[in-house]
Length: 193
Image (cartoon, rainbow, N blue to C red; front, side):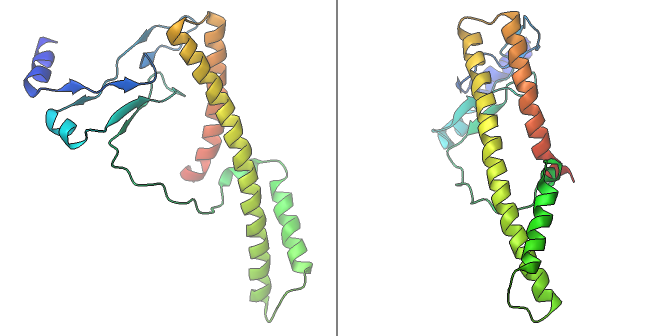
């Protein structure tokens, strides 16, 4: 340990101040052990290059470590989201039937048609428009559910850092986290196929 501390001192490394959670690790028990295990050390040169850098602890979900988000203030603005089909929609009640219904409605609707390809393009356009709206509504509902779960977890974490939680409250926190993980897992299905 002395060699490690000497190395940090020799390099002049400094711990970047963290905003957010008081602890960065827990053993996820009803009466948990909590500790600060995760830290970010920076050199004087790095600190001069990124003077506006910040380190923020993000709410811990699905891990015993709190994720740390390092921002150098050198980030690009996010790009506008594009429509894409999400595989997990297929698991939503009524989705396949609703798309099939829109496709059949489009086939029966009057439109400019010279060939079967024109019909197919028209039907595909109508189905895509429906899916885009359906996905936006589902996305809004999921965002609201995720936000409510995350807000509840963050409130419990804040209380844990200030006055502590009872074993029942810790179990409630873990239950909320498990619900949020189900949503995250469903969303990730798209990226793994």
